[in-house]
Image (cartoon, rainbow, N blue to C red; front, side, top):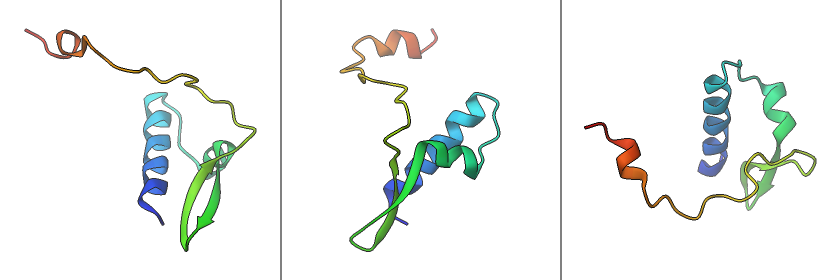
Length: 70
């Protein structure tokens, strides 16, 4: 499997666990489908799946004050 495919699987697992939901293959297949390109298998987003983040943030200028506790 292509490394990007593994990142998608781990991201899905992280999101499910953060929402206290069991990550299952059935749930994963709602959002992704297997794709083969140049001999590597990976996962691509299903066309019918809704995107959660439509416009990713461009930058996080003030992340340090919110990240560190003094």
